[in-house]
Image 1 (tube, rainbow over the protein chains, first blue to last red):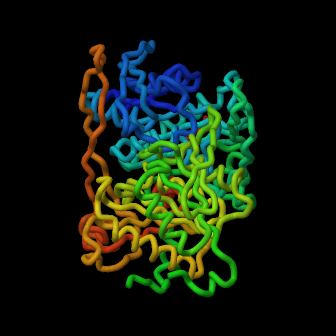
Image 2: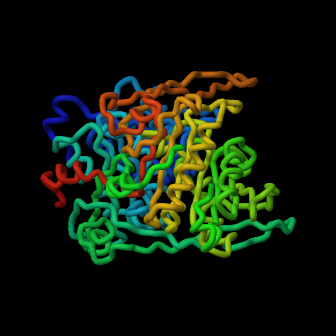
Length: 266
Length: 266
């Protein structure tokens, strides 16, 4: 239920975006939940954009088209990437800066290393860079007909927490929901990203003309299995994981080491 | 000149990738410099991929074609993204893990916030995630006919430093070269990413059929102008900037704050 104080003062303006495309099941659930808390504005890609990372469109034009979504204040489909959608919402479509930016609900995990490949998280990060507290919400299940009750409850919880607690304007949350029935979810955990890695393989296929193409598949490895303060530990143990992220990728421990290098500039 | 010790032991295997495409001027310079230090293997996109962030191809096949590059051990053009190129090199094309992965030389800055949007840096980061010391090298000038003498010297310096100093296998350097004549470059500085922001605008245009499309342009703002330990300060003051980066985007300061939140899971 919406926080009474914030409803009285000002109906929160909530920007919703995703990377699975404007017609995906996850975004519909997020819109339904968010519209109980505020005015919902949707700007989402017109097609699936999974794995787009933080791509933006710099060598092409972008088209935006009005889209009908019941119960929303405004909705647009966009030919650009998830990050483009947020930029276009802020700089072109919306009259005022939203109070929240929510991305998802993504079909598939964005925990650990997956943040860097994730269109969902790039949209949330883009929102936070524009000074809007943001969250990307992802369900660790790729199947289109999976039970998303725990995902809906998580979305409600995240919105309620973000509206009722003091948040920095650059806050960006990476929220992941374990693939277990809602009654088994033990609660939420604030954590850090686990170190992980993808072991990839490329399977060769042939098209009708006999030309070879390669298809990516991979297996993920948790490199910090014993560490209890990580998102992967939380998910493996029945918790919703919440990791605050930011755009500073400086490796401070490496910085200390390479400062000792002999520098050669001759 | 190559480090004698490393040449004697084993000729370094150097993987070269970029985001401006396999025929760009920057990659040619990097190949020329790197081939003085080791065996060069090129896997690069068949078209420009600027602004691709850490995108990977998950919904399509990827095609790889042999490409002729004088003086290289092997070269391939690839229909995928910069990050795809590195994955395909490691998991499909190369027989042994390279000793170095170099991405660039990019035409345009990848300092500060630009790392998250950069195909160049995603390729370098991907290399480091595979346990290969890596560097993305970028020249703060977009013009195709710019004077790249300082860029070539920087590439030489970076390779020499990485081969002669002890490097962690996950080391990833974000190297940027200021847009000044080579004789004015004061040396190199190890730094952290400056906080910055893009202020965007979308200009509406019409195609021949009268349909509107939007074109992105933006102005960059350094949010830490007075801080002397940042890459933007180094570049503004005539230094090549070197920032070690990693894939951990956890915002540890925010984590401490949100741990104090009242959590609601009812």
